[in-house]
Image (cartoon, rainbow, N blue to C red; front, side, top):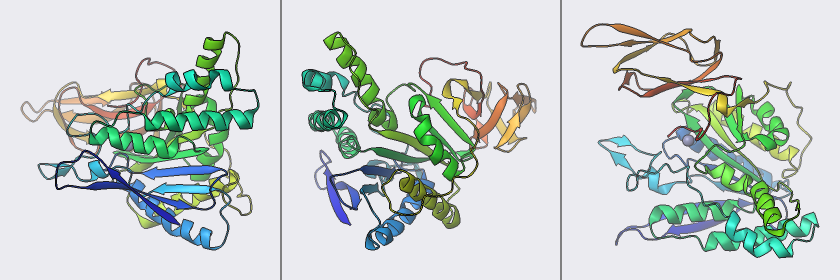
Length: 375
Ligand SMILES: [Zn+2]
């Protein structure tokens, strides 16, 4: 294992933060990047990374790694250090208010300008040329503050990977994942091995989350190069990326984390990065549902939230999910499901302000457009 320290620049005098990447296995071939805690307060991801760390050390010692596996055991040292009134703040950068998992750079324009004329139609050579250009483009991204520096380093570590897994968790939720729609045939085996209860897919989620910045750059680049050259240019989809939501934020448990780590490693066997007998794939789980069908449950007024249903149940549109009790009047409003589907995530806090998003129900019907992810 090779440990690399990446100092974050532009901190205040007398302070120092760094990102750490752990590199296992041989370089120069296939590469996977797994990062935990980009939303720094999503602790289940950190524990899964801890288990992966031990297992990867053992697999490397056994000579079973066939490619490079890069593990970021904590992807967000800025967020890990944020507190406000005794509460950890790991989702948003306190200085800018920006979500740590949004606004990754669109590298397509500058990479297209560099590689358009050089692409030969040879898939292996073209992927190598594009990856080199992506690396150069990453290195040129602005780094005027600590957050920009972090985003540039994370993207630079992942942009040439064949596989990118971004480990997160929700508030209270079932195990689920997000990926880009065209990647589903490749991600289905991951969903199966993990035993996810829900996979959500979208062509574009909006606001450039990390996984899409790594994976959708390939089809977007092909489109842009084709436009520039006035003819169709094909590029392989050279990066498979997914965001895995490791249940709810209190699901921090060694047995669960060890199980999830083994499922991820089994998938890396499928992808050829780890040597071993092909894992038997559990029966195919539910088909992916469109992210456009994921509907929020919104509090119409402030109140005490008393849930009626647990996460993980199939519900019908109009079915009661929670009571919202106004402590000033004693009135109770019943919050109902906005769609037929799977009630898969809900807020951990039990008091809502007016307009708060309290839960999510995934449905098959495509009902939303625009930016599809939570704030
Ligand atoms: Zn997250």
